[in-house]
Length: 250
Image (tube, rainbow, N blue to C red; front, top):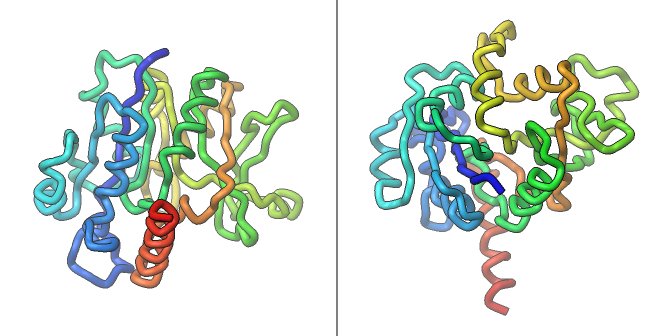
């Protein structure tokens, strides 16, 4: 079994939080949100945990300096694909798997990620993504699977036919990649979109177009995959965490 390292996207501003604090430092039951993501990366036995920092990076580094993490700076916010590419120097001679997590998705549980890792190690695809079924998947990329259950394509809302729009399984933005193919493919993604950004899911599109094997694991708990973009979602996440702690205490 090859090793596993985790990269955490933590460079964003979080404009919708209406605060000067970097998004990942907003407190969740008294602890900065990013600490929950580092916790889960530790719980699954990551060999290396790399935080990609950018906006107010000194604050994020100060808040996490006692954690077992390394840092990479994304100087310009040019998208998630560009962010992960900045970590390449840390993985020069690394032949393991790389799990990509978001610093604003603090409810993910180690048990879910372990299932993702298990499937990835068993099926040996170039990438495995976490998916969820959403009652209203409007706005999300839909997962189209082939007859064996592997990912045939991810279709963005704007490109989806009426049939594809019926699919409720969505891409939640949590991935495991094999490191060398990932860093070979990241420079190939293009930024020909409205935002002019390089998006990580485009790596999956390139793999699929080449006929590579891509696996997907459906989480039964859509709530744990939710990103936190505003104060209401922060409060909701706090309530979920308190409920979990209550269940542990019972």
